[in-house]
Structure formats: structure tokens, C-alpha cells
Image (cartoon, rainbow over all chains, first blue to last red):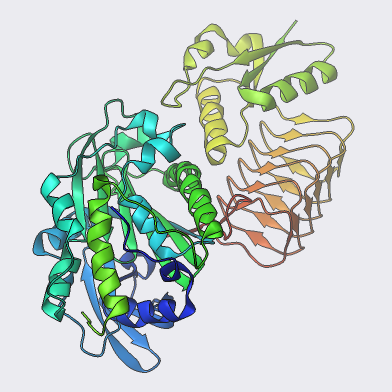
Length: 327
Length: 207
């Protein structure tokens, strides 16, 4: 199957601005964690859809402002989401109740210590989401580490591949919102962790999920959450488009809630972050190489059935970019 | 002859062992490696073979896990009643008023200014300069050639890597890691990590 994604989607400033207007200023964006502003009077400034948005804690109520203008904000457990649309879609139009509940459940189990950093990557933001939804990438990109530890092969139902091959007939806002709900999923994956490395601090936290599984959440368009140690700690990756060829990759690490106090928890999270730096660094290096060779007359790639999820997103994305349809 | 057991792991164990060997003609200096398991836990059984009345211990574990692993062995040795002397190279320039805690290592050509305080279990490698009236709290790791101004306070478990210059009067928070080779001219918050592999510092919120 030929991809629906034309090179200009990754290169054009005009397309980038359309994405900002039609996706990032219409959908619910991950905007940070409560733990970053835990007390009354705490504030943080986040770049969302190209705008600086001030998020504040007012006696435990979280508020978002762009300039003087209040923006819609929704707490989901520890997570904060902001919608910059003048008439924002209800959050359940974007996140299904089951996805919402899963995010809420896992993030409520998190502790209050957060590590945070930013990498300035040289690729278009869509590439990293496409990479994450292609689970075959693990054995090709992470053969030296992650792939030895987990079998990330997840079968794709044939009917999904068939559906993804069809055009999107109904391009109404209602249909597009129904489509976007399917781009978000999360919780327990079928991937078992057969030989989880047990380190002493694992016994000092209350893990989420209760199984030795890989946990994974994708919230379109800017958030990925994962736990590769069976719910003992979690990484959050937030993707902020800066320009067609630039994306800020923010990385957060947070631990499941402690059951006893210990003073080296930030070092444990730092060790996690260094591990993920290696893995995500492999992704970033490949995606930057892809971006680097893209040009306006680059041939359209071919996709396999395993990329059905990407194809579902791409038909929705192409509709938004190439027509007047909106969420 | 009394024994000097240099106990730990890695390259720093080797460095400390050779430093003690050269410095101690009257002691039986022995290098003892403590194995770490897959879970990074130390096998402490080696301590069962040592007796405090027969020798002293020097703990030599590098900065791994934010200096917590060195601290872990230090506490074990202390709890078992061992004396933990410091090592100060004969080629270091240490002001006579400086206070040096237990199990501190000060390498050759290091300069420790007057009225400095170096708390227990800290390591100041060769050629590092610590300005007058500076205070290094417990279990700090200072790499070779680091320059630290006067009146600098360095929090417990902090790591200052080669190439870093810390301006006088600065406070470096506990658990901070200054790994970018640059001048640090503002206070550093607790646990902030400047690591050359990253584009931006790693910040820690909450606890």
C-alpha cells in the first residue's frame, strides 16, 4: 500500500501552520503534571501550539491562560490537558471513557518526584508518532538492547488493515472526532516482561498494573507514556513541534508512589532516564536521518499491513490538511 | 604489620589502592573488590573476613548512583566498627586549618584553601582546586582539574566533573551534577544534572 503522506507534510511551513491551527489548537494537548506546580501560587509556562500558556495552581484548582484569556484545562489524575480552541470539544470527544479512565488510574498511582529534560530534535513531529505506532521498529532500531528484553511484536487485525486501506468517507467534525478517539490507546499491552530486572527500590514503591507487562499509552497528538519495568516507574514523552523540521522532545520520569521513604529515588529515576536516553536516542538518530533526506519530490513510501494504525491516522490527517474539514 | 584494606570496585578502587600503596610503607595494603549483583546490590560477605583490630578500611567506590553506593559501603564499614582514615596525597597542598572528614580522598596536586571543610566520604581528585572557606558536604565527588572558587558550598552527593569551574560564593545543591564543561556562576538547585549527553539540564521537581 502506498502511504498517504506526501513529502510536503513534513517540509512545508504552510502545512506546519495549518497543523497548528487545525490539530494543535483544536485538540486536547498534554500540558504538564500537577507535581510540577503542587502548591497554591505555583505557575509554569508551557509552549502549546506555538503559544506560551501559563498554567497555575489556585488553591488546588488548575487554570490555564494565554495572555489574559482563560483556556480550557482538564486534570486527568496527575496529568494536565489544555485545549486552546475558542469552543473546545468535550474531552470525551477526544479521549474515550476507557482511555480517560486508564490514564487517570495509572497517573493517580504516581508519586510526586519528577525528572524533566528536553531534547531539541531535528525531525518533523509526525515521524516519532509514526515510529511509535510501528512496533516492528523495535527489533530494527533497538536490536542491541530493548529488543533483547521484550518481544514487541503485536499482531494487527486483518480487518483493521482492510479498513485503513479505505478512504475516509464521512469528513464531518463528528466523524473526525470519532476517528481521533481511536488514535489514543493505553494500558497493558500483550507484551510480557519475562525477566524483569529487580532492583531494590522496586520493593519500596506500589507498582501500577499488577503484572509483569509493558505498559504503554499514546495520546494524540503530543504524548507518549510507557513503563518498561511493570509499572514501577513511567516515562512521559511530550512532542512539541517547533518548525517543520524541528521538534522538542520533552522527557519526564516519575516513579510509582513510594511505600517507604528512601533518599536515592532521584538517582533511580536518573538511571531510568539515562537508559531511555540510549533507546530514544536511537529513535531520534534514525528519524533525523529520515528527515534529512526528505525533499519535495521524494517518492511516497509503501506501507505494510502492520502500519494500519498509522494509515488510520494518516487518512484523517490528510483530510484535515487537504480539505476545509475540522474537528 | 597492620593492614590497610582498600575496599570497593572499579577504576577508583585501583587508583586508591595504588595511592595507599605508595604512601604506606609500614602497612600491608590490600585491595579488596566487592562484587555487585545484577540488582546492583553489594555482596558484603567480604567484611566477615576482616577484623577492626587487625586493620583499617578505606572505601573506594566511584560516583555511581550519585555517590550513594560509596556511602552504602562506608556505612557498612562504620557499623562494623572499622576505622576509616582519610587519604591525603603527599603532593597535595592542603591548608593546615582545613578540616578533613573520614574516608576522604585528596589526590596529588589538589589544592585545598584555608578554612575549607571537606566532609566524610568525599573525593577530591588530582589537580582539583578548592578555594578558601569552601565547604564540601558528605560524599561529594570532584573530578581532576575542577576549579572551585572561595566560599563555595557543595551539597551532599554532588558531582563536579572535569572542565567545570564554580565561581566564588556559589551554592551547589545536594545531589547536583555539574557535567557541562563551563563556568557555573549562579546557584544550582538540588539534584539538577548537567550531563553532556543532554541538550538541556535535567531538573527534579518534588520529592
